[in-house]
Length: 153
Image (cartoon, rainbow, N blue to C red):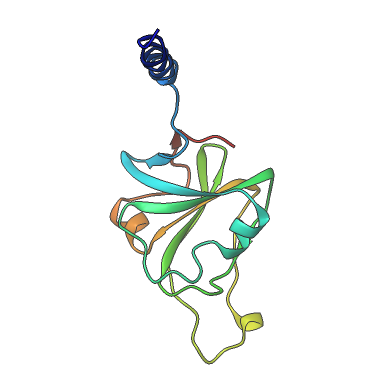
């Protein structure tokens, strides 16, 4: 009798391990473009999309934020609350349609309604933000394919 509980625990753990093998792990999402992989944080809710990377001091290299939109449309971003420059990559499904490289942080002496806006050239349903200079360094171009791993939306 005293061996039944430990045996059940072992069987339960083994069951969980076997059932998780081969399944995407949602806490390790990534995006790959031209062979360069970025660990990404997902922005799905309106609150996450509105805040974005604002109010952060830095972003680790080869990481980023991936924004999701329910329907493809022309999307517009701005640099409100940003403390560092970024590249903004507009994506429709699995193809880059617009890239803004080295987007600077806004000047401290202008009002938010004066901030420059960055819009996609055509409808998109995803946007990737990464550190400024990486799109140029890695040679990203409009038309490049985007690959997703461990991403649920």
